[in-house]
Image (cartoon, rainbow, N blue to C red; front, top):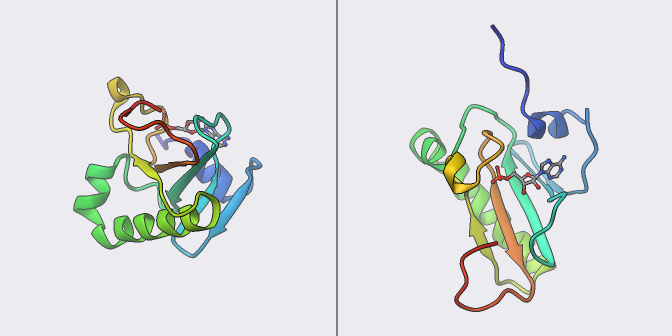
Length: 116
Ligand code: AMP
């Protein structure tokens, strides 16, 4: 049985629309459809091979480093350079899409809070 493509693969393939703010050979970034902060961008590797950040770190650490670098560049452009980087890992932690992605949150976040 072949698994159906993730919603993020469908965005990469332009099957569904998204507000794309960055794209390279390896990575795509677009605004979260349900933003939890004034700036809320998802940075997603185009490959669907890794379900979460632990798998990505083990399987392709350079790609994880690329995601962090893209996150910084987007924060520089849209959030004054400072940001919160979240990788929800597992259903109980709030992960709903099992195609690894980083949430880049910025713009007027409260101090000392971890929740989105
Ligand atoms: P997570 O809960 O960490 O798996 O994050 C999945 C995120 O994807 C959520 O914040 C959703 O709001 C976001 N999301 C789901 N569908 C779309 C979409 N079509 N375009 C943009 N963001 C989406």
